[in-house]
Length: 247
Image: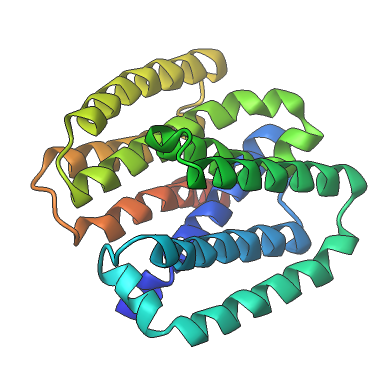
């Protein structure tokens, strides 16, 4: 179990679940197996690579980074395999989705370069939240640009989660203040979505993710709660189960 947790597989599952959720509420359809596979492989690839880059330029930060250092050779084999699989699947994507994906990859590399040069380091979590959310909803907003409105709470939730993770590592008035401001923004966004849709089950997954992270950040903070913070993004299961049992 710790090995699976340290490989960030719960993050991959959460990203796929939110992709399904956004697909259904915005396009009234389900993503194809190809679209789900590409997202899962890319998210896993980026997270594993990010851990390796962290270990190259920073001291070992936690148990997760230590595991990535201990199994470095195996992790690089996994990363190479994921990269190969992604390159094999890319030609089967539609050109507009492929273009948007490459644009997002360019933005990711540009931010990575800026961070390495010491630029915007204090906003790492914000840019990570934006890039993560745009990636999760990429196929959706390419097909339906108005879906970007539903990505706003996902960006807020990802940023709330990342602020919480920073507080796990070290108590910080900066992230504590950002966390509170983000919570108020999310309350406003979720209230707006409910007012516009009048559908509780569209708001509920966002609300559950928000509520779980809120409760975790207000209780005694410890490294053990990181995993539960990641599991907060499994909340679209509520919406999916509701759709199955109400059909």
